[in-house]
Image 1: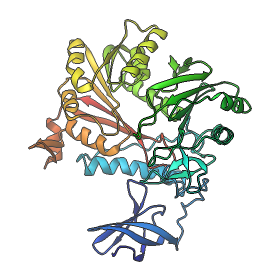
Image 2: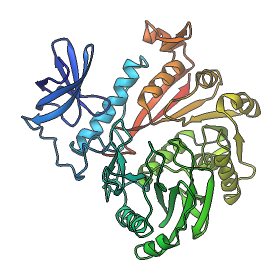
Image 3: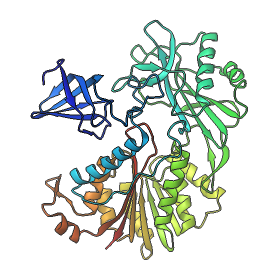
Amino acid sequence: MIKNEEYIGEVIALGSEGEGVIRSQDQTAFVPFCLPGEKVSFKALKVNGSAVFGKLTEVHTLSPHRVIPLCPQFEKCGGCQLQHADYETQLALKRDTVRNCLKKIGGLEVDVSPVVASEKQYGYRNKLALPVGVDTYGNNIVGFYAPRSHRIVPINYCCLQMEWSKPLISALLDFMSAEHLKGYDEIACIGQVRHIVAREIGGRLLITIVTARKIDLAPLGELLRKSFKNFTLVNNVNSSRSNVIFGKEWHICLGEATFTAVQDGIKYKAGANTFLQVNDDVRSRLYQAVVDACRDEDAVAVDLYSGGGMLTAMLANACRAAYGVEIVRQAVDCADELKKLNGLRDKMFNICGAVEDKLEEVFAQTAGYKRVVVCDPPRKGMERSVVNAVAKSGADKVVLISCNPATLARDLGILCGTLTEVDGQLVKAPDYAAANAKAPYKIVSVTPFDMFPQTKHVETLVVLERK
């Protein structure tokens, strides 16, 4: 295929990014927004050897699984990849993605359970985080970044968000117009308003306006009172030139800085920067599945990458005790507060530091007890030293939570012996059965959870037991 030329082909499968896969001679084209069985026309935008990346121009034969997207900005905004597919197809894709990654990357041929579906396919997100900028005419806009860019696609409502997103965006734009404020231009580094971030917790809305300098948000508060009764309004000042959303300066404009809420039976204090999973329904089912897998009154749970301590607290109630390891000081402070609120003084222990640095210390403190290790790392997965330490820990059970099937497959391959390190590089063992027989752990279950309907993303829970 030649760049900028148009071709016709039949989609034979969906790729891990949700794109259609089309094969022609010795080349494979990846074309977003089409479905298996469809005959489509596409333009070759990039040709990289045998891989071609295309843009859909026409669908000649419609799949019976194609649906009309709810969002008018679908295909333009980078938030969703799968609104054109029915929900059954989305779940099948995510299950296949997990299965294929485990096999191709980790050398693991294991059963993958059907995906745990989300109760809501739309309106499920409890958090909104949008950049604020200006269009080519100088008008203020709020929206999502276009795929692989920092060009803002303007929206007035996102159908993945809860109902409050529409009046919230409208109020912000009205406020900026009345106060003669401009959205931020990342290239020129001019403008006052950079981001809007909001989250609903227990019926209360925490709204943060990120600005390049401190701004009086009292007029915005008056506008918000027309639509919302119970909210906190915060001004975060970020004067840096980085792409990080929040700066270090916080000002409470209306409401309380933090408030107490209850989630999955655990009391906690929520603030503007508190981390929680965006899908309440799926998060509850995922965390409960983790707790059920670890429940043992004689065992000590070791929660790695523990964040604000929500899961650590749940594990402390289900086990003899729980240790959480987290590098972010603010998150550990939240975990300590949560420990007090739930009366877990003698059952929950929070340690601040990099997991790879603190792991040996935690394992030494829990020596002599049955142990279950829980790992919920960032997208990059676990550090190699952490995976190796977990493999040698002697823990009775290891439970992994991952938002990235590729790094999950890599980490599992090390734990199960199907990947070995040669000259600093991971290579697949030539004999899966023989390699796995020598490994300390075996996979008991692999269960994907659809935390993010309409997108390519999937959360996966893996339970391993010591042989």
